[in-house]
Structures are given as C-alpha cells and as structure tokens.
Length: 190
Ligand code: GAR
Image (cartoon, rainbow, N blue to C red):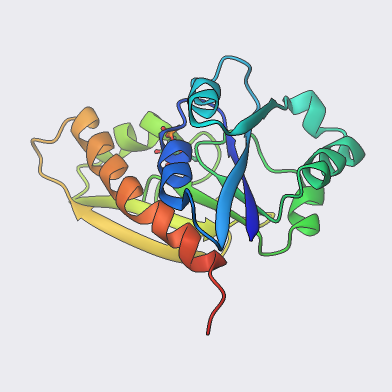
C-alpha cells in the first residue's frame, strides 16, 4: 500500500477529495497532510477526516535532513501537491524520483510559472478572453510547472464567464479527475 503525503498551503479541497476517494483503497491512502502555513483551512479538514497533519514551514523545508526524516518517519512513498505554493526543494525531487505530482489550474504551458497560482491564473485567463481553460496534472521537476504532463483536461469558456465562474469550472475538473489520476498512477499494472 502506497502512503501519500498531500502538501498544501490553504483551503485543501483537493486534499479532501483525494482522501475521501482513496478511503479504504488497498493500493493507496492519504496518510499525511503537510501544510506550510499554520492557518491553512486544510488542517481543519485533516482533523475532521482523521488524517495526521504537520505544519512544515519554509524554514523547516530548508533543513534537508529533518524534512527527509519527517517523511521517512511517516513512511511516505508518494507526494501530491494540491495548492502548495512553495517551490519544492531540489533535494526532495531527487529523493522522490517520479513520485511527486502537482495539479495546476490551467492548460500548461499557458499561465504557468512564478506567481501564477489560484485566482491569478483565472484572472489572466479572463483578461485574455481565452475560449477554454482547464487543468494540468504533471510530475514535478526542477523547472517550475515544467515536469512531464500526466493529464490535461479542458473546458470551454464563454465571454460571459466571470473569474469566479472560471474558477468553479476548474474546480469541477479537479474534483472529477485528480483523485482518480492519483489512484491510477499508484495502482500496479497487471
Ligand atoms: C487548486 O485550484 C490548484 O489547482 C491550485 O490551487 C488550488 C488549491 O485549491 N494550484 C495552483 O495554483 C498551483 N500553482 P484547494 O486548496 O482547495 O485544493
């Protein structure tokens, strides 16, 4: 059974959806929430769901040995970034080769890179009058938003869609596709 740590910085709706989806699964389970912010709402979700959580700040991440030790102590095999706004340290990417994935709320490479997260992405999509947007699930590499794509799904936009409407469409795609993609990656192929 693969033990997953989900890394977040805020709300944690994807964390909750993945945790619920995998509940009782023999191949993969979310067993740890890591938040870099002590005030993240995701921490409340974790306690409601009975998932262990740790607050691990940027300063904590700067300590390579302690960070690896913390994840080893929790027996973590796989890391899912779900609204995690810090850069993942290179040592972690090397320690978990092909075992860290991220979700980005746009059709990368469009609207990716530094500063492009959450509503900033949807605002830029609206401003440019895009006819579609979507989600990208990808492996995490040393280039910000640059790792190999696992799945992209798009959704049409109307000129009448507000930024909130765009965000809602993207959240629906995340809810539908992220949990099952995580499971698919972690299910042994016959
Ligand atoms: C999600 O829409 C995710 O795609 C986005 O943050 C949101 C987190 O929502 N991630 C990024 O923008 C990463 N660059 P959640 O905390 O409710 O899961």
